[in-house]
Image (tube, rainbow, N blue to C red; front, side, top):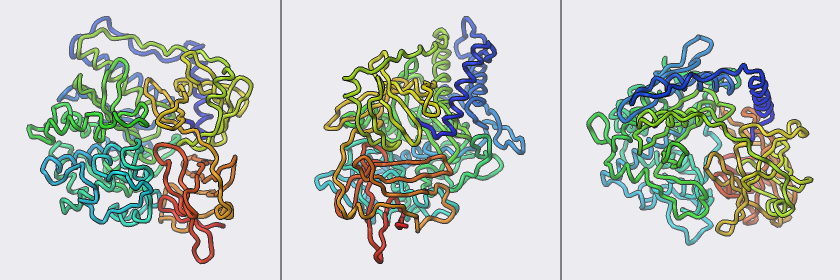
Length: 599
């Protein structure tokens, strides 16, 4: 991930500080690894993870964090670190309640599968069967239906979000999202590509309300949270209460405003609560002696659903779960979460009957949560199986080299990515680009992939740890030239190579700056500096969200009619429709619920 300038500066300074500490021999050392570990003795795991978490929290500006490690039906370790409330000096503990973000989707999907078990819905029938007022336009006449199954696997083709009003002081009921969709378009035909959609899961929440006749949060509490024994968990628009953590970023307290899309991200819980959910998964669907899900249903949720989708390069998904294979761990099923400031990750390793959940009240500047989770699972597997504790192998420094003319020719060009527009051009023996104001180079690597090199202040080539771990390749897949990223053995689509599309004069006349005229009251993520531009032969949609250091975002769009264009690229947020309207003689742009008027 390429961070905004301020975070890039911090990453560079952290990187430089780490080098100086290593050179001076002053870096903190992990606890001494024992020669042997008794089966089931987790004391070394606790000591090592305590050291690792404290070190990473300090380096990555995390104020408070809680963790729990689950061995089958037992929590073998749970602990809090830092502060849930720094001003009042309230320590984070295993009981501290956090916003769990998209971990919520696992619970919403579980509720859907419970109804399927009861014969109240068929996940392969059209969503409209159970939500009759749902309708959305499509440019794909031969496409199959949007179903609960392809929503749960993020293959519905629905837009990723309805941005306006999503994070706001007084959000409208999420069930109202269904009405404006009749004027919108799907981004893809169903089952074409994995494209993450909060909107889709929120529609499932609306479907649940209609089928059960109960409001979503109350139904989830009675049907799932209480039967699991999750006594401090609840679906809610916001977070409050004596156990609730505050939110932080860059050592400053922040406000977690309410989230409209409650089924997609509104679960509040602590690590003890979420450990009960993990234990249910490891017990084949049972909790407290009663079935939450039938074993067959749970196995279906954990089964890969997208093996026949060519464009899902490297992405494996179950029903709700993301499926990966990790070195030294094996097959895992997981789901992470992010609200405005809280971060989370819940992971199970079914083969070993182990699980880990990590919750934090601050966005780390690096990969703290993944790093801690992977280490916890590796140690737990060794302790549970009686294997020797492996040494922490240092990641060998990746050899970099200049690019050949053939490599430059292969990758040079213009790309549409989730990070924005990228143009790669030959520069000496590298490929140079700028992304959101930052200078980057692509260089050769010993493994045949491209490496990313960041130019500090646009001049000094560096390769901080996070960028050095990412390999990039270009591959032709199912008619598309894709830029693929490989990180820790996992491959995902980074972007698509694109070609300019003719811009009709009717759209060129709409170029200029725009302002939002229907912003929801108390909106937290306010797009600013909105504009339509022409650049490098493309029509570009530009905006910034300064509150969250998202600046100079630029997305190429391609006309599909006289009054509509789609965002180019593949994946989440790509191929979504931007409508161009004229109201009372004034030019407007409509996108993701926002209505923007030309200045």
